[in-house]
Length: 471
Ligand code: AMP
Ligand code: ZN
Image 1: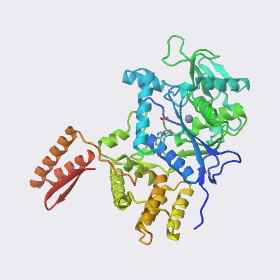
Image 2: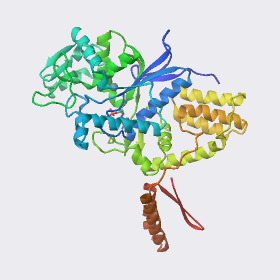
Image 3: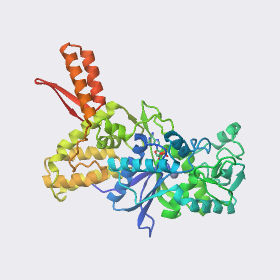
Image 4: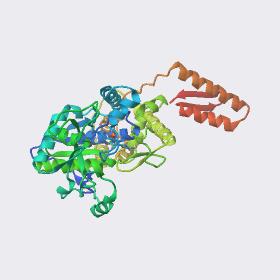
């Protein structure tokens, strides 16, 4: 089996391309748009960070050194991506009764805890927008000097029609946009123009505001990613990623302002993770407040690795539909996988035989094909069933594959600790179910079994009565 080079789907070309580094570039300059820290990350957001972790681990598996930068958006993101609505951070402060700075700190910490629970590697550099105000102002000044900006009564705007390639990246329909110009665009010259700097309201002091050559205010959302990525990684990045929702506005605007400022290509590859949905709609959104957190899954007794496996079993460019049934299946698959890999915990070895090397190539080929994680998991399962390779080689292969999958297969899983209240609730429901079973009320018994499952209790009815355990 021949080893392939890593091929990645580039949103810019809408095609898979072989990934290599340009001459003289020692490490992959990787930038991922991070969270807006006004609320918990939901499991949809986390799916995107799982995809980016798969990418980072895969690049390292293919021998690249990676400089991975993730930003924390703690200012400037308004409730609409089109520069309108409330400031998300101020909204978070009103909701929680805390200051914007406290809100940012709290949700940043929660986000980092989620990443750790999901075994997502921390980036090489974390950066936050409020630490890079000077760089954002400099970038806007550069754009102003080159004639790409104009002023309205509420801010400094980027003149998108001065960047002829503006519509290219998202394949925007400029004719449609022009005919749709009837929509209220305020003082903007064109619908796709966007704020680089917003002025503070004259009658109100904002919780977050800074002096600038244009007056007191705050940066627009898009400028932070251009300023931070170029400060930390240079004017051209190798890979820039985020969720698919960023293609049309956020990444299009990042490209426009960065390329107009430098005259260089902003990013060689663009990669986007598709959305996690619930009930096949895009309902899971942070701003709607209706979403599931990783904490909620853990409280229901799910191992975060089951969510990781659930995400890995679909390709990152496909929609993934969340349901409790699908999570239940992921728990079963993880259990089955662990039963096969547990006997290899603590065994040391190397990949030596031709057969073992073939498995390694097969796994690599799956990942090489635009990070085909579900095919890679298939290879892992087939390899585990192969009796022709020695245990120490199997252990080495599990270690190698899990370096990419990150399922902690060679760690002993820790049982989630249950509170006395949870234990009491489980016992009460089991008791009620026993009563229903004695009364042959099967509908009630089934309903109680589902209720138990929803709080993380799995039951098995056997000859010696009902046994139960936490998932
Ligand atoms: P935010 O904190 O809202 O700025 O989003 C953080 C990341 O999550 C961004 O890369 C978004 O594109 C991504 N994202 C938002 N909603 C979803 C979803 N339902 N599924 C997958 N990714 C999402
Ligand atoms: Zn961004």
